[in-house]
Amino acid sequence: MWLRLATSEDKEKLLEMAADLRRSGARIEIRELIEWEEDELFFISGKLSELRKISASEKLRGEIEKWERRITVLRKILKKGEVRYEEFLESFMKSEDPEVYESAKKLMAEDLDAEDLVSFAENAIKIGILMDELQLFLDKNGIEVGEFVRGNLPDDPEVTVILEEPVEGARNLVVVDYFPLWELYVDVLSLLGEEVDDRVLGCILAVISNILLNVEKVEDIEKLRELSSSIIDGENGEILINCEEIFETIVRSLEKAGIVRVSGKKIKIRRGLW
Image (cartoon, rainbow, N blue to C red):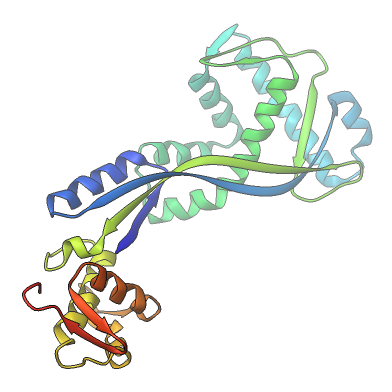
């Protein structure tokens, strides 16, 4: 019976977890999949001088002024001729939003505490929109982006302003981002009788063990179902475990593994196997 124990964009983290589980005798699988996110935004494009003329809404005016500041910063960075991408991004982000820049650095160093995580989560959408805007701007104005960033901005650059709400003259922009994810699966039955540190895995093992220990007393499957929910002692209190919706899956898996035998509404332990 396979349990999805963890999902992460960090494959190395899952490999470390898998290695620990293997040492306990667990059967594990790591599966790669493609995840996606979709967001609907709005945009308006044109030469900076043209956008200044049509900035009727206060929101758009504010965004154009923001781009004027950004362009001044970008001209200064690109004045060197060519800049390593990491240095380019660092210089831009320090100027754009120092607080978000420091938060991103902590994320890369895996040095975020609970407060940092909440703060970064709140800024994640803003960072995504900013990176999309910056990439569009560089592409539209002939700036080469690779290991190094090279090029000179035109006197009147093309600007695309991305907005969360529509303004007059704006068009819809649907952003679909694809990214890899890895999932760690564990065959729960391969760890029956073993002590595990992971709480999620330990809880389901506790329920399965409780069911098996009571099969001799309660042979009726429907009565046994009541044991698929239980309360156990945790480190800082009690844990309420509810496996009722997967009770049939547990029973089928135990039968397939040859641990129990099901006949109608009756269930029995297979002698000599448990």
